[in-house]
Image (cartoon, rainbow, N blue to C red):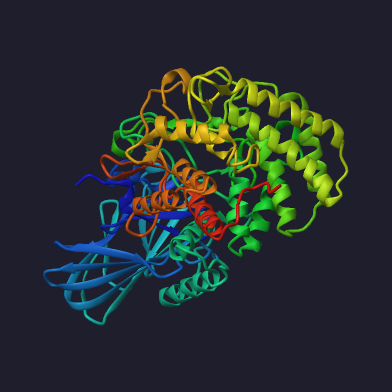
Length: 596
């Protein structure tokens, strides 16, 4: 059976993650961090690249759900011999990263099979396997994994295999823990207690949500995903826990998303602040400021989870890729690109932090002033833009608008919060950028702003103009752009980023509809007063989620399949913010990022 990206569920211990297929196989896991080498890489290959299967031996049909407000996964199997439930969880990190799997007998007698096949180094390194006391340990280079279970277990070639019959009322635990191979093995844990601890953590965390508006369950699920993609030691939030899941099957648009993008800063901050998660918002802002500190002249668009700057991109040639989509990439060369919009995102994040009473930071403002000083010259340059094109740099409209945002928010910080800065000079630059965008990016022929200066292409990022306060939602140019984007970029009811081809981004054409852009369309329609249309589209997007509420980056409507890295933080952030926008506009409150 062909796998789909939507077949997977997320587990997370707030430092790394695992993806579990609906048929019981953990096909992706990186230890000890999100961006570490994978020890299970069957997601991008097959069984021989590493996986951990736990499922009935015979035929059976699974149904699954998350426990409410958590990342504790329950999969129930109906088989000819009976019914079982498999409970999967990654407890918030204690002494060592841990995966707990408990099989619970519900009816009859069901024979289950556990098959652990670890492959370190993204599926390339076959480890040594040995039994130590009551555990099996696999070791290679710096990595070691220990498997404990009370049921009979044996080594079969390089796999660790258990086969046992589970009766109604019986519970059979399995515990897997990673540790550095040079270190002492971590002490055993009680799997049932670890499940209780994980449940209690998530229930406490979810109870802190202040959102009580429409679509609360969907909003909370997305917030739980964002928490699961957070690297707890630093507060950084990865874009996704995976690499190289294709934007189109068989295509080359396969990127490593296990890093933290500055572009996500403001939207993520707003999603957390407006749903009651001030502590998470504060940690995210602190990560942001640490990451960019020390070298403001060379702000990058993305960093590692601890703020690492070097993210060299290389190709894993021994992995065939998901759905034969090559190349499989590790690292991301886009970290070296020039993308002017990040200056606006960083400055806007500072402004939103103050307006939401997150606290003042003089060091942050000194950095902000420095950034604006750099941007005084750099805003006139072409760049690679929001979509990180690998073609020729252009004067992208979204980049120029976000440069305008940077100066606008710097001015507001001075006017509203007493910060010191050259306001008159910044006002002049803000006016110059605004006039230039309105002149160079407008097309009378299209009745719309365009993707870049002098272009005839459209781009979904143009929908953000009213959200960031560049022009009001009822401005005829904004409405014309909304109409043109809907007309030209809608595909089977959802929105493309732009019409992809080699001329713009240097890659072969072909990708799905882009889910964050479709949520931006929800926002644009709501701000334009078209609440019913916005609601209809939002509910269509909720239907795109998989059976447990997870979203990838893109979607192929014709085949009903998710595309791109998974689950995608940007898509879940956009869902939360669109729900907030719908709630506000339904109450007659205009909601955008820079209220007049």
